[in-house]
Image (cartoon, rainbow, N blue to C red; front, side):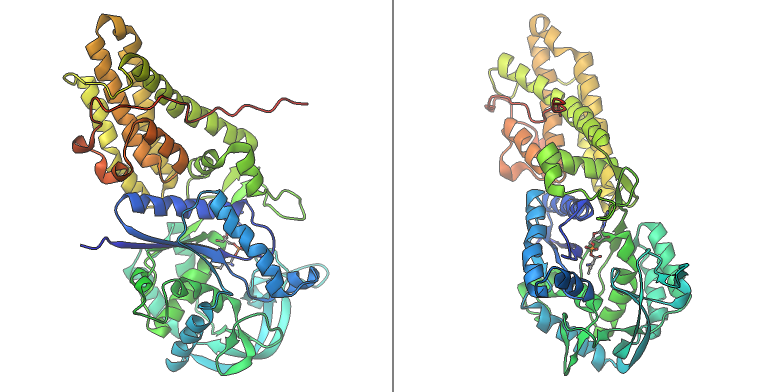
Length: 515
Ligand code: ME8
């Protein structure tokens, strides 16, 4: 039987500046989910990319004195390189300037037109270039100088021009019915409640084309209009599945299982996107999850404040896995969180170096020295041994449950609870004291500890892939035995199997000498 598919995406980022820590956070979270699903037996397709059209990019390109295409060609590779540096396992990096995106988006437009949902009129209203979004007068705040600001704090400008409209107002009831029938569609719950009450207040038709600039996809049959960048951007998710070729091998991935996006763009993904898809007669994504924002010591990162953090510099300082671990463990996924040097160093040293690193180092070096560098032969298990193994073997269900809710921090907390238990087990069994008094019992304790490390090693792969792989190498776990299905009695370490020389996997972070 073919494996069940799992399609996960991030948002696609605006390449109007270098990638920042928020972009890094999102792609790492999505990668952890993608990797988890892979080791849980799914046929996964994971896509991320860049959202390259629109006025914002055009204006920034102009300020830099280059054409929009030259500008995005310079920046998009930085986003891709950031994902690679963070060891994110995306299957495609899509750019909305990729050649397959135009026919796909034209087809979406035509289907919406065939459904009678697109009409030509005139748009008059406010637009925020920074948000690439329209706002009603009532949503804006008037400034002392007479200018207006969007709820995001971005300036708005008055737009009056011919525009194609999408009949969003006609979708209010269908959207509300969808939210009611599929409570899991929008997560977390706070985001869902916000969207539901917003839609209940009524929806206005949406302006979906512009005529006063040209950096966008042309409207089919009326190329003096370019499509509103959000129509173009959202459609990337089906382009990646081969749309409109429903015979493409990729089409099996649609509808997406989840779009992992930030909380600021939940409305676009849970109102516009499902309405476009309903209009085009396409199935809707199963879930949309809006994660929180990452701040630098409580402050929003901005170029003008000068506190934008370069993710490449962070990986240089802390290493890829420690940074990934910090992102996923420190902040409850779905909530806002803070980055600080102290917080990350604390996570590296406490959780990785002390809890997991020391346990691995101490047990594996004892095995190396006292068990002929091979998996020890266990005797009969004591109650404490069985309790330890039971706890570790109960992890897959717990971790799976947490991952199903996108509670990445919870998944890690469950794993580290077992690591903590294993440390207590190891300390209370005192295998170093058993070496002389009862070597057979020492072998059993070391076997149980190694087996717990195997289970932990398998389950931390989605979060800290390189370190997990090193740990599993030290336990001589073959690559095909690194799936969740290998956890349990049948997959346990084979006594007698040769082990490589132990090496430290989780170095401590040592503050560079103050010069
Ligand atoms: O919104 N912390 O692009 P974008 C966490 N092109 N996440 C953050 C963040 C922060 N400080 N700042 C931004 C766009 N993000 C559109 C998306 S999708 C069809 C089009 C998240 O470059 C943000 O919420 O402004 C979004 O999910 C992603 O980074 C890209 O943001």
